[in-house]
Length: 237
Image (cartoon, rainbow, N blue to C red; front, side, top):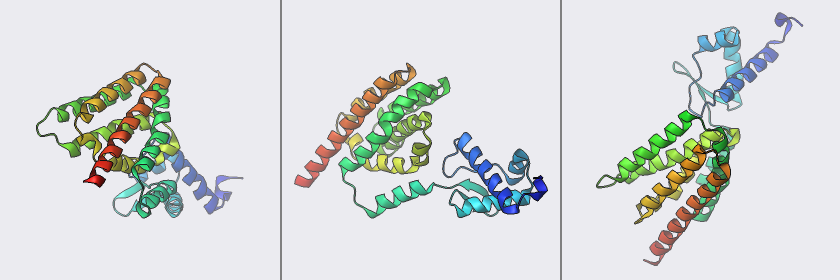
């Protein structure tokens, strides 16, 4: 069958699949902009009208958001939207939040040890240096410290390269924010967390996935105990 004989809908669906391949191969996170329409059409060797039709198909599927005059952006996957909706509609206790982190982060650390490049290690080390700098200030900017702490963990998850976990990074970030809200403020927790971060990074840099996973689990377990103890103290007071 010649290209001209392909039904328009089939052609648009094929192009839509190619766009999804680009999103996945470039590991574009929700909110990331796709290449400009002209560039994307040239890249896929298709006409701009056919590309527009494909993008509208993807928008209808919830895969992209088309913002007129601004461009096309990767949408948060349906699975992530559903997880976020569940978080909003239900009250999760601390144990559930830390369970979610453990399920996602422990295997991610193992995979990251297998895949981390020198540039990945450099990024992680830079984040740890920033955490040390913030921790050394008086007074400590705990809001910024929390952002950097979450960044360290999310970077490891990103390095792991698991597509499902990457699609839910936004939700995982919310889980981290909720679970870290008080732990970093507890006396001694910053120092313990900093030491554990360095150990996790060393295991990843050495390619020891089993150790990285073990250390990550211990790190999350320690944070859980601190958070639960603080929650219990507040309940009593």
